Image (cartoon, rainbow over all chains, first blue to last red; front, side, top):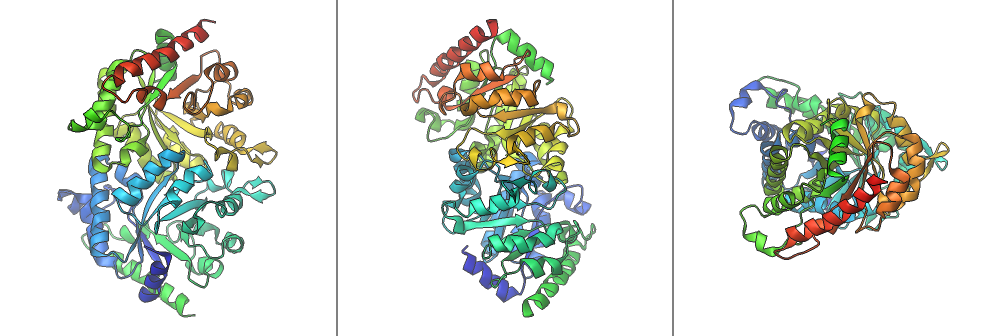
Length: 271
Length: 271
């Protein structure tokens, strides 16, 4: 999917919501456990109920890998289901991968070709030749970790490197990489005040913003500092939507929660 | 496996060799492609032939994920085969994972419980709460990326942070984390001269050293600067051993290459 197609979907749906599909068998409604594939059954119900309210789905691969082969199979079924039934939806493999050159190419193939995701999240620590193999894929997007929403972000990301915080060095440096037009960035919502500075460095890039809701980030604040002329934001919510109810009504309650966010977004977009 | 058990195996086998199982279907002998599971068939042949010469095997997960479900299945069969037939061998999931707290716990479960690896490689960018969930597992080891062997290592890792290179900050900071005794570190062999400084910071930790051979690192140099009283080194070789021959004799040629390294190690250990 091209960036322009994503922008067009955002305008059409009046939403820049991304729903995180982080399926934990201890947290899903327990009646689903009798299904042949409870993970996929849960995802399918969430997708069927919410696809008109969001522009992106983001499975975090950790939750699938934790269940071994059956988890990987559920991930495969989920992405194929989205691509078949809702090809207009932007898909993010939240995998936080990164390795040396030829190995990163293998990861890129895994997520872009085998699973046919539109994008994958990648860690920057290993530098240029660990990220460029992902950027080489046409109409695919590499979402680089810049400033994450966890406490540990302050261990290294905000430390000063040659007069500038490390996450800003990551932003600046990544702009010089080949096919950097295919970059998006992860910026945590719990640090909304950092977004103004970030926008000075990467005015046009899309930002994937986790941490709204459960982790305490504020949508209004994020939009105030982070939105650009083409919106440029994907706001992720996982637990706040998919685990809003643990009962048989989980999908309907997910709709209610997603709708709340979509309506808030619609108001912001109409300003 | 405890660190003491690993040290005891090193002394017994007179080897600190780790063999990287990075299986690329384009590079393995083509007669294996007619096998039901060519990846596992290749690994089994390499393991059967070389297990007496090495103390560790390290599959890089990228190579398995790139083949989707059948790749994940081959990874599962490989680790189960090693654990069943050679439980004395230290196993490393070279996965370079890392995510926020509860998600890192899911990754830790995937590799330590479901797949039963002894260790996993982890990226440090997200800081303390992304690594501690791995460290919480008893008798399991978290191998933190410090200084990698690729060109991109110079993009961020060697940049100066508060008066000290980032990779040194990572080493120093990681020592303060809970259960830091379960840490090992990735340090690339192409930067052997850095090892003296690294040993000043982490004198006792094990280092996983990729980049000997194919990437130009020198075993003698690495040992000169990096070895400690308990050896403290795992030297990885992947392509130099497993792809030394592309013919039906690949496993025998792998033995020859592994034996060369083991003998060189034996000489170093006897000094």
